Image (cartoon, rainbow, N blue to C red):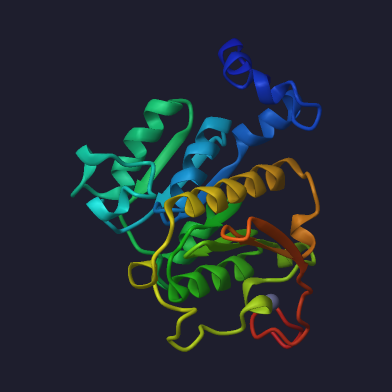
Length: 253
Ligand SMILES: [Zn+2]
């Protein structure tokens, strides 16, 4: 596959980078991504992946746009309130880059549908806002040998990690073995609050991690979690080792 004239124009600024080049752009165009959750994290993730030319993207989200989403979910506008997020996102993203093949599923990821969704993806992007679905998605990714790039946000804080146990890295359960009991750390943002720009910051960092993963750049997949503190203005990267006793990817499984 060689880039067309239009592709060379659209992606010119990133193709200029020696770390990307024409070969890297072709990799992006050939990649199939599954983005689960089209909310505060999914908005910047989808906008940047589509702008960068990630070739095929499936969006899974069962929610509809609410007015209280617009403070952070920048894919949507006042005119889309009440409409399904998946199809609204598809329309917005199609206008941004019609070359990307978007599949919009108005569906929640469940134990029934997750294996089929993950099987069709080269890279899985976890933009979920609840632990239950995140564990379902993570376990399916480990079973299928697919990488999962995961982020979470709360208040002024966020975290981000690339999980690729098929290539020696940790899985999500190495980091978080089981869903936590309902606590201050496990409550959804409609109860605890979130600053919109923090969702934008962490989601944009997540999009960068996806692009780097596709291009084979950096060492994120070797096992790190990045912790963002928007109030302090700091970012910390902490080593995250694979757990040999992990209930999902450990030696006993
Ligand atoms: Zn594990």
